[in-house]
Amino acid sequence: MRVALFVTCLTDTFYPATGRAVVRLLERLGCVVEFPFEQTCCGQMHYNTGYPAQAGELARRYRRVFAGYDAVVAPSGSCAAMVREYYPSLLAGADIPPTYELSEFLVDLLGVLDVGAHFPHRVTYHPTCHSLRALGVGDRPTRLLRAVRGLQLYELPQAQSCCGFGGTFAVKNADTSTAMLSDKMHAVASTGADVLTAGDNSCLMHIGGGLSRLRAGVQPVHLAEILASTEEEPWQPATR
Image (cartoon, rainbow, N blue to C red; front, side, top):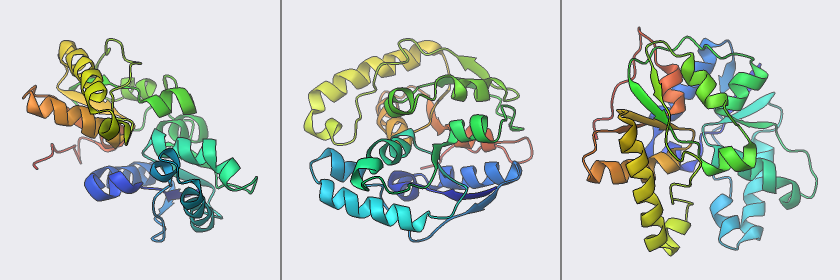
């Protein structure tokens, strides 16, 4: 299967290890992975802040750059949801490259749960809003996590509650965002996990930033990095 990685802006800029983990994981599972260098933003920020024309330009670029691939995989439920939910109207019914969030690609297209991962840590999972509500990934991520050797999965209280990030929402509604973040951080801390994972680095950045200020001792780690980790090539904690 010829697969393209849509790395997304935030991951490419701040969390490149996640992009590398996706490639390593998919290649281990037999996929031929390519990285189109002309890719750029999906346009979600533009669309959500009232610039549909500019978002449409980016949608047309996305369609051109990713045309011809069997699948496009994104380590972001948020960006995958933008493509799947809003591109049909922005592109006036034109064909859109088949785009998948990582967990749904692994479970639905490749048909795997045990990806050969090894991650001996206590983990709790936060289902991000777009993956949960827009894409409906359901329990795919937790099914993948339960198949990881050495991993102890702890249920997150009130898991379906938003973390308060929401892109520009956190900037325009800082007080509300902070209150939502506080609830989420307390829920994470109550699990006793030492790793928080999710399918979106944006939410992990938001929650992880709060946890670091509390010195909670919980490391945010993208789902892709957990699934790519093996005994031979284990995940290494961030040093920054």
